[in-house]
Image 1 (cartoon, rainbow, N blue to C red):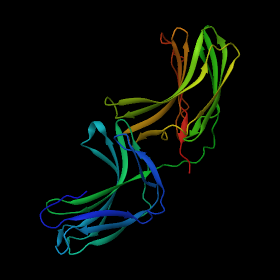
Image 2: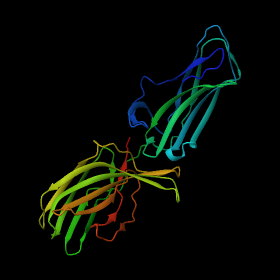
Image 3: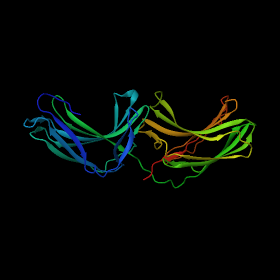
Image 4: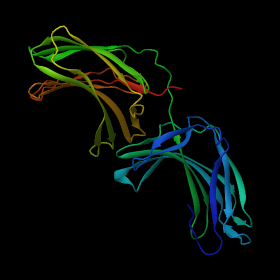
Length: 323
């Protein structure tokens, strides 16, 4: 994008040194569409060239300096006027003066810290971008190039299974078991559900993956829930002693690693919601938090059953992205 003033103007182009070999990753934009961007990881060097092309050859371009910035930024949609920068690096490419012809400038940001995953959500956006600027007295000429950053994790040393009994007294008693507590984004959730006591006429059972995005702090906290997937695991009435297998492939769903209190601005968590529906359309549910990351909260919050037939717990399961 160029901004014009009187007389000479120019176009800016940003070219990465390894543009031909660097991988690209698909990333969702704010309008819901997807595009491909150059993919980087924490600690990688970002280097390239800035091409400044004069639009009117033969005319001089006076400027107040030329610079390149590398920026990591969080934008909360309800507070668009404020951009929260957690990475801000600047390199001056030219002192104030004038350009008499098109020129190319080299730049390099060495071993750049990129602590967070790129993310576009319901109420928040975290992005990284390069911005080249030719400063002028009236209107600057600038160009941005957005990149995508993925965070990587090693496979957890301890990844124990989850086993728990839940139910409604004298009505329904089930035991469920998942093969692990931490999951990779391309992993498979494998488990079983055992019916130990069935005095309710169950006709249907499903597992939902719920994404919960939390933004803000204190009294200004916003929660957005989004159902990522619905997976039917049973159709028909179970009997005592019956075992229902679970095998849910995560690769087909659009998910991110679990994000906890990113720069004290937002969090993203995923929940496994086990839902049973009886013949009278009453719903019995149990929600399991599934963190996609390295940490597995040990605290289990039991929720007492109420008229909505809650089978009540909230506990996390982890997802992460491996190298």
